[in-house]
Length: 111
Image (cartoon, rainbow, N blue to C red; front, side, top):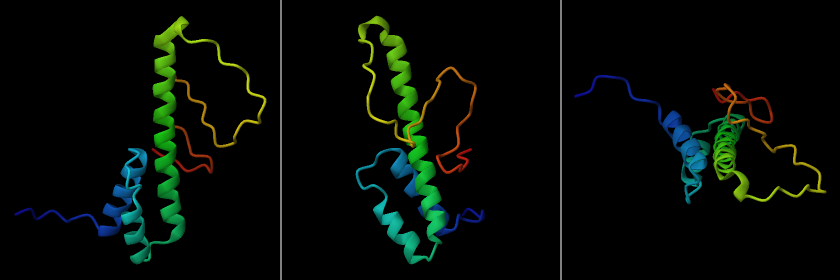
């Protein structure tokens, strides 16, 4: 039998919610969201978990796209400039940078 203390159920739900969002799981973490609210976890903590998970998901996607584009080289046409304003939540990631992670739009650290 394992005598190690177990993680609190709210922590497990937060981890599961974040992992589901970051992994683009089809259930979207709605079950964990409901559990967290039923446990009276403060909404600002839940929102922080959601923001960090989305940021990590989006950052990973940007890095994958950047790596693909770099390997694809001349195969891809030059992107056309967009006339629409840039979304403030867009993330610009340099794949070659030695940065562990970047903060979320609201300044939340994901490291």
